[in-house]
Image (cartoon, rainbow, N blue to C red; front, side, top):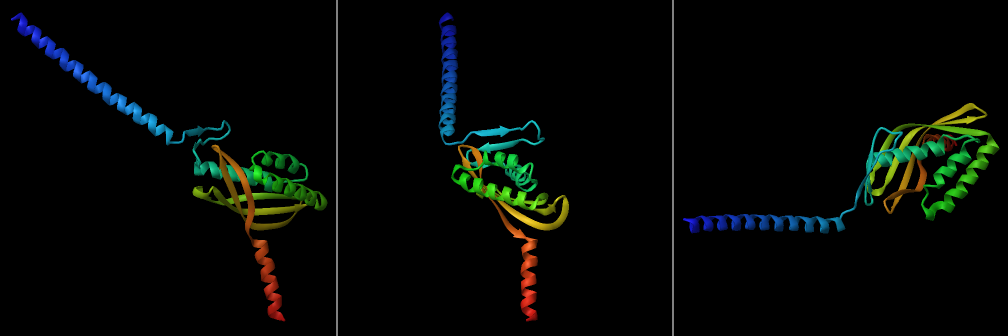
Length: 200
């Protein structure tokens, strides 16, 4: 009787041992798989700026579309809402985010823009209306109304579209281009030229 009971206990212990061993093997495989997958996956960083309501994610060379939109709008504000007083400071902020290969170009352009602003006593204000985001190419197009002023007096209001181009470096976003791609002012000039040619 005691021998039979002892055999049952041994069998029970053997079963428990086998179950625990099997579970340990499964857990070991899972840990190994997770470790291997970590080598092939970029870490996702959640960014939640204190002054903004929305958080953003960054994963390797991929960025949340809302983050691209927010950064493009921020640069548009710094470069298009300008006066003779604030442009030097705002352009210096932009230069902190410019890609190293494009730093010289932007620096030269900002100096030329500042000279033009001072010479003509002009200021501008950009009212953003529409945004088109292309996350795969890190490009954002901003469309809106650009208001121009001379000595505080409004002299123009044109529909403008700007292409903001970024580049990823080590999980960070850098500015490589801020170019105008469409302007109602240019359309008006072209239309006037065509009209004059037709009259001749």
